[in-house]
Length: 490
Image (tube, rainbow, N blue to C red; front, side, top):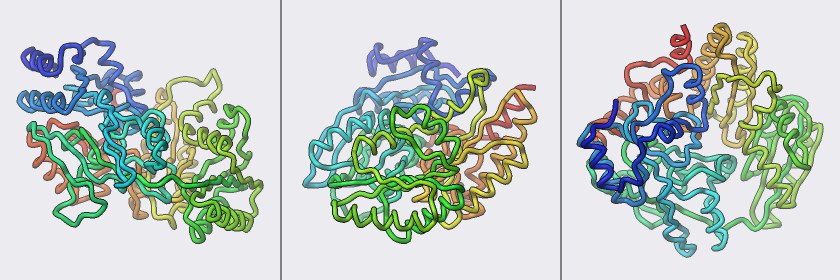
């Protein structure tokens, strides 16, 4: 759409010309996140979603001034942290202003006595963990991208990760937010008290809103004492059925901090890049971490091992050394990227991929996995499931060759079937990666009439519709992005 010269001048006056970028190379760099949507831009220019200008905000006043300009000029604004999102959440699909919040990276306060910390949105999760460790506390949500992702991005997308089984998602650890609204006002949504029964819960409204209502400029988050001890149990099974059944029995006995499923193709590729430790070469592997006081941990290990043996595992190992545990988790965290190693060198072409992030009732996980495998087989597409068994969050990924119309059509059918089945079983189209642009076409299918009220709420906070448009729901075109890609290739 382009930025009017007068608006560009106002932005430069507000934040300094050295924080405003219009160079083509910079704009292109900010058109990518870690998901599959930007890859489509290589196949069709129709999917090259570059901003018109990038603005780096260094203070609350910077954010406020940028929003005032955008609101006056009706320019779209896409807030962005580290860009580790997988659903196109921070891709500027409508152009406009890309608001980079990473310079706002101060840890303002850590108060173990109040069990809270106050941080700016650009604080990287790993740096926060290191700071908190010095105080003997930690912030439990831990996405796979913890080395890179920002706390603001985690809150905006309600991220979680492997520890959600015991500790919940980011939503459960936010006490209060300071939010800059499109009209230039700044509101505080909560307080520092651990409990409140006062008024509507605006804090939770902004958690998971993906920048569609306002910009998070500060967060007061809960922290808790770091567990004294932990152990990791890794069990390999000859079938996914046995692995899932074992996981279900474990959850009846203990509440592990993490309970993960990794399937054979991931095991094979992860072992290629592991420096020393190896996952068992089994059809399915579960990773069960328990934490707490030492005696509590040992009791939990005993219970988990007993349950695992009941299902006749092919292998069973218990790890207590911190270095071993960290190494095994490192491979699991980056499984989605490591899996690319499964392609031989001559196969390394651009692949269309959908990273499904469904959430299911725990009792429906096995049914869903079998359904996915069966439907994918019918359509000639390979599915590669892994995920968080402890809270029913599955990543059912598939890869297809976009130059093959047959494969692409099959992939589109599979995507719809996987989404519809998750909803039919009482689940959700996204459990931790957010909706963004990729899952927006399926929001009405899941939420029905409730979606109308979500749109009404957006109009209250953002009457001009400038905040991250095209996210959470579509605007005029309800087709999946792969359908749009198929059309553009003809």
